Image (cartoon, rainbow, N blue to C red; front, top):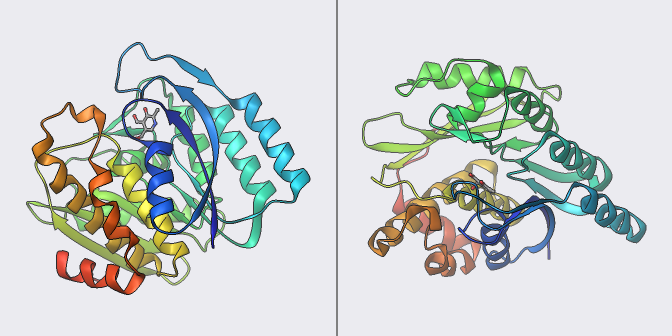
Length: 294
Ligand code: PXL
């Protein structure tokens, strides 16, 4: 069984980060180890949240694992919260990455052209350093703009998105990374991803129907499915297609729930799709979405 380390917060209320990553990755047959960055009474879209930073505790947890000689097949970082916590994530990558460990980073810090509350521009700079250590990064348009200094546009076209991806990967130091920009609309009424593999210059795009509702935590669902699919042997493009289709399917099956969107999507209902074998998943993906473009 493949083993992944996920580094992100535990938000007790409001499905996101670890409360999505653990069940999703487990359903996909991946052993999931958590390194919590902070404990919050609820994610930060709620008000007056209780928050306990775990920077010092992370140190102790990592020291123990180092004594045990633990390594991981993949490391997936999500919401971190402070620059010191990004530093800890970089430390974990350095300590537990083997040559073949796949590192996936979702530089969670903003949406709709703005950083989430509490984040300063220097947080974006630090997040760029983290992204430069990753094999695949999954920023949304806001996050990619914050990291590259490119002005955010609501109405970007293909050339705009390509410019962002090129800037993101050329500001990296590895030259072999891949990036997939999420929340990209290339056609009215559609949404999806655009990707670039800096190693071979290959572009990728995939679109689904845009659903008229924005639940919290869908980015974490998307990243978790991508990570699980890659560990199950999919290519990065196949993993992104599955993640797009699965996220769309989950939003669709949540629409009737009539709850505050901050509580998140009903990802529990669609977990069985992820438990099917990989062949079955890709059949479902092909039927559910549009043809991916290389
Ligand atoms: O879903 C991203 C996320 C994760 N964790 C916390 C958050 C957010 C987004 O706002 O606040 C604590």
